[in-house]
Amino acid sequence: MLRTVHTVTVADILLLVAAGLLGGAVNAVAGGGSLIVFPALLATGFGTVAANVTNSVAQWPGYLGSVLGFGKELAGQRGRLLALSLSAILGAAAGCVLLLTTPAAAFDAIVPLLVLLASLLLAVQPLIAKVVAPPAEDSSAGKRIPLHLAIFVACIYGGYFGGALGVVLIGVLALTVNDSLRRLNALKSALSLVVATVTVIAFGIFGPVDWLAVAVIAPSTLVGGFIGAKVARRLNDTVLRWCVVIFGVGVAAYLFFTG
Image (cartoon, rainbow, N blue to C red; front, side):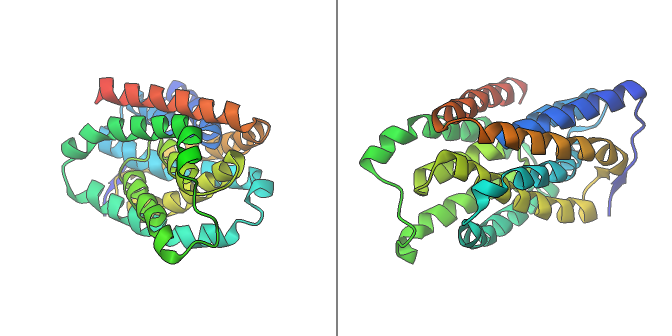
């Protein structure tokens, strides 16, 4: 069991609080808030692995805040969420195992491509939907397998790194589930909370988590996630779609040039 204690200054604390607040809000609106908190941790002197696992644990309250803020949009989606949660849990657990047991280089190389692809899929989703409509809720189990498989693969990424997981999830959901983007965004936040719960347990036991940094960041992500959800609820589907797409492309570029 690994533990990390990292000394932070007052300036570091202010930076991490601001990053947590903004990251929680961005996760609710578009996804990708981890790409704000992760660099902030690196800037305060954390190593990459310690920053990654600390970031993952500290993001959990932000996802909880988003879910609380999306209460209206999540109404009536309990069955859908429960059905997808098992795939999310299995994928997240696999991602955590990958992070803790394998070299990062090979997986890191494809992360920017995954985020970019998810963003582009979301951009063209209305056009694709005209040709291949998302399956109805009463579709046979066989027709739902691609959705569960896609969620499983996305959550492997979420357990491993998680930056822009929301972009990946909402891209998958928009192409496979027949519902408004606002409701799918709420479902994305709930699935992100499931993934975050798995990472908190796995990294809390086996990862080099810095609990002081978590104590600084976590409360601000909770507030940011709740505020971000309120903002996202007021955006129409077109505006929300392009917010996610633009941010996702930016995240992919960031990962590409800093990877």
